[in-house]
Image (cartoon, rainbow, N blue to C red; front, side, top):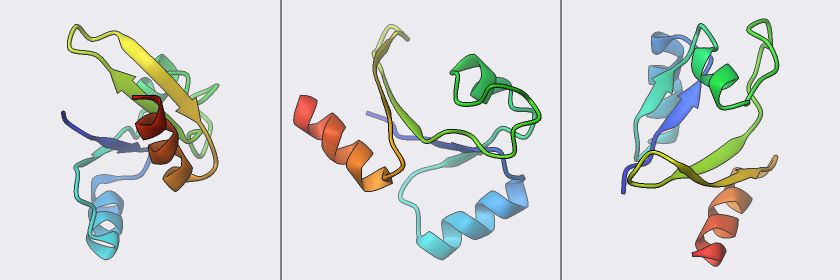
Amino acid sequence: MQIFGVSFDTEAENKAFAEKLDFPFPLLCDTSRAMGLAYRACDSAADPYPNRITYVIGPEGEIQQAIETKDPGGQAAAILASL
């Protein structure tokens, strides 16, 4: 299993944020909003922030689950409860 975070922030901003919070997983940059648009985490490339969505992507690349919430801890608990 691999976990990634994705943010619209720059590499320097993501690095500082990840170091401050001691993230245990990579935090990727999506400054162009291409991934956010593809995964429907935003409605337009002008959106300042993505929606908080957790995706479970299967080994064949298909989305198995998508959970949107304002509570990141709730996302993890909801996914774990459904497994």
